[in-house]
Image (cartoon, rainbow, N blue to C red; front, side):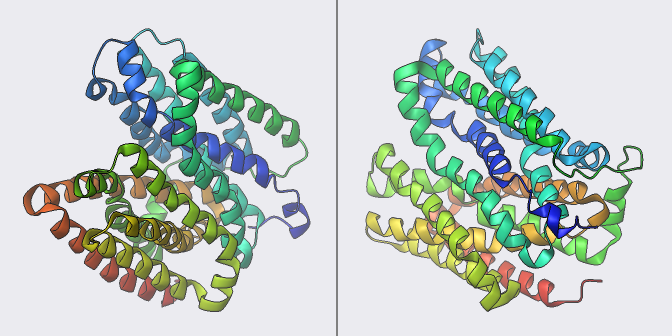
Length: 390
C-alpha cells in the first residue's frame, strides 16, 4: 500500500541519494588505490585486489536477508543502521595492518552497504505512485551515477595527497554525517513497518508469481548481458589502441555522463515511449554501442560509445527497477533485494562467460555475440512488459 501523497512530499530524496553515493563510492573508490595499498603492504596488486571482491561479494549475498529485515523493522531504520555500520567498518579500514585485515573489514563494509540502495528504492516505492516512480527513482539514481563518475578519479586524486587511509577516513566521516542527518529526519518521516515476524516466505511467493519470475529472470539476464561486458572495455581499449589507463579512465567516465543525461530526460521518454518503448530504445543503444566499439578503427569513437552505453543501460535498467518495486507491494524491500541479488549473480556469470569467449575467440567475437544477445533479450523483455500483470 502506498503512503498518502501528502506524506510523499517529505521524501528525503537528497539524503537517500547521498547514501547511494557513499554505498557505490565504497566499491569504486578502491580501484585507483590498489597500487598504493600494495606498495604500503609490500606486496603486489593482484594480492591486494581481494579487497575489491571482499566488498562486492557480501554486498550481493546479503540481499537475501536484508529485504525481509527492511520490511519487518522499517526501511529508513535499516538504512540508518547500515550507514552507521558502513562508516564504522570503513573507518576501521584506515587502521588495517595488513591485506587480510583490510579484506575482512571490507567484507563488513560491503555487507553493511548492501542495505542502502535496494531498501532505499523500496522506501521510495512505498511513498510514490507507480506513474511517477521511475522519475523519482532516477533522482535517487543521481547519487549512484555520480559515484560511478567521480569515485575513481576522486579516489586517485585524494589518494595521491592524503593516502589510501585518508580516503577511507573521508568516506567514514561522510557516512557518520549522513547517518546523523537521517537520524534527525527519522522521527518526522513515515516509515512502514511490517507486522509479521522476520520470514523468507515472501521469496516463495515471488517464485510462484509468473510475472515476478519473468522479471527476475530478466534481471539476471540484465546482469549477464549488459553488465557482464563492463570489466573488459578498459583492457580492450588499452590493448587495441595502446591508450594509457588514465586516458581510458576519462573515456569510461562518459558512461556516467550518459547516465546523468538519462536522469534528465527520463520523464519525457517514459511519457512518450512507454515502458516497452524505453526498453527497446535502451537495449538498441546498448547493443549498437557494444558493436560499434569493437568494430571501431579509431579510439575516439569510444567517447560516443560510452555516452550511449550509459544512457541506454539506465533507460532499460530503470524500467526493470521500477517494475521490481511493484512485484510484492506488501514486502517491497524483499522484492527489490531479490532483484539486486539476481542482478549481482548475473553480472558475475556474465563476466565469466565473456572472459571465456574472449579467451577462445577474441574480443571481436565476444563483443559481437554479446551485442546480438542484448538484442534478443531486449525483444523478450519488451514482450514481457506488454503482457498482463497477473
